[in-house]
Image 1 (cartoon, rainbow, N blue to C red):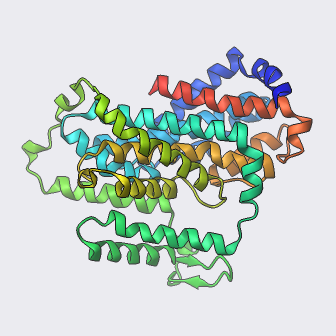
Image 2: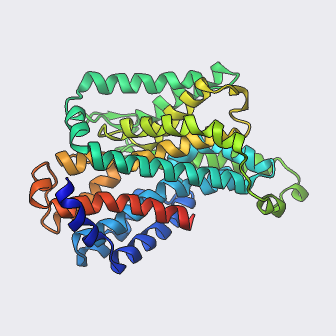
Length: 373
């Protein structure tokens, strides 16, 4: 590893790479902050831009979009109570209530700092533990994936609040919606009613973002017109985060970053699962669980650190085993292959300087994300 660090830093720290990183971070933040425009859509649209680039600038540009997309969704979740991306839904539960208390800037800063920590933590895991962790992840089979799904369903008990019945009804409705489309194993049509557009199922981002947006629209429709004016005083707060709040955030941020990495290395999972797992865990471990859902700084920090900790972790199986961790990373694979780089453990010996430049670049991406945010 050490023999590759020096040449990798020489390849990474160029003006071209710095410019592409910042451009990617800006584009990713804007796309993710607009409900309905997902990160994967942004990567697909801008992927052709990288075809004329070499491997490192192209990957830096796409990683900038990817990492900033993990943070950007929290902006609309906090400001307008509608998550910009599906994994920002957990952030919304406490981000918007804290904003309504007149601490909009504080909520945005908590989300930014937690996202940056989670992103850098996962980048360090990728740099130092990537090959070892990937070998363990490769051993996971059907039984382990099933247990992950079951564990995901148990989170309903933690996030249902005071009404378990409403939580169970929502869970059943979600399972029903997920069954629409062709069966992935047999291709048998389920609940399509002969409508060809339903054969591919209902998109998660559309359902999740649309659901929260619809609820917010209906909530606003119930209010009088004179109460719909934007209260600009909420974004003029000093944004101060107290030392006590920093202390309260420390444990959930660290634990959620670990959870985000563990979820991210399992192909087929993603930031949404990590954010809900972490939010539920932080609530169970908190000394003030009654604050969750009413503007808890721990809830915001846990959700945001987890969904950004996934970014570096999804690259672990991609770079070491050639298996993309999620859909967005799968698209990035073409940016590597077009430059003749076929991911795998052998690539670390044949093109080690480029691989370590990309991994070090992920740390740099998160630093610039913090500065821009």
